[in-house]
Amino acid sequence: MNLNNICIVLSHPEESRNIGAACRAMANNDIHELRIVGNKEDYDEERVRILAIHAADIWENAKFYKSVKEASEDCVLAAGTTRRRGKKRKGKLFFPEEFAQRASQITDSSGKIAIVFGNERTGLTDDELNECTAGVTIPSCDAFPSLNLSHAVQIMCYQCFRENSRDKHGYTPVSLSRINSTVQVITDNLQKIGFFSITGRPDMEHFWKNLLSRSAISEGEAQYIEKIFTKAAGLSGKAGNTAKAELACKSSNSQDKTNQK
Image 1: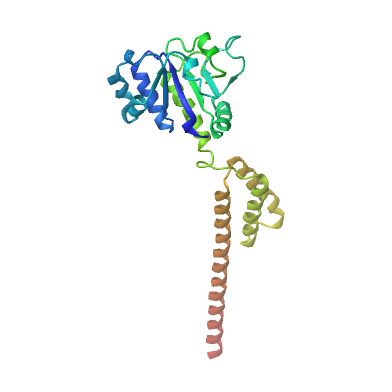
Image 2 (image 1 turned 45 degrees about the horizontal axis):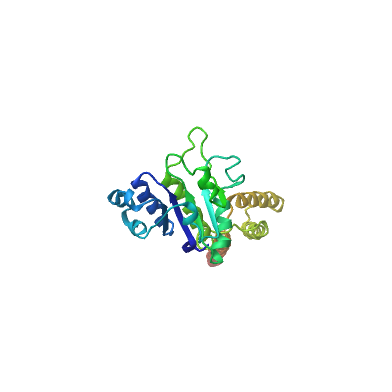
């Protein structure tokens, strides 16, 4: 995902501090283009800066528009955020992670995407949502479903950031086929050191396969586990050889003493 092609649209936000908090949420996730439906003079810049902290440049570069339509007219897709469903609420609403996956394809092809948020009190009106081309909903508790504006911005920006960094952070769990290879290395080395008899090996293999698959290990972790058991078996072998050598030496010394007598 190209985060430079994501823009956050706040439609008539009421609280200046929420704008500042939204700027900070955007900066946390490397998204910097802010568009506001409303008039700049209606907001208290000092209160914006209090919560924006080091993300005040996002506020300074924000652009102002008369409508959601105008704010998103250069975008390929405009996604309105809403917690309410209904005939005029876009029917199918994407979850944030679903939206981020779709947005990734568009932004990587140089298309811009607008994520639109309504004001704190009413959210997006039906008319404003109608100016969007898709709907996104953030699941929340039925007893207290309303999210703070900046929290909603944070969640949406974070999902986009995670989609962008999918190949840079985290890992891809290995397949069961790969886990089988690790299990074989483990049990081969356990058998070398006499940990179990031949009849006990299948149960041990089953144990390790279930454990490692539930843990969703990475390739690096699989290799590290293999090195641990291989090294342990090697050290055990050296210790055994050393013990045999010492025993042979003692036996030889004992025999020499006997002969001397």
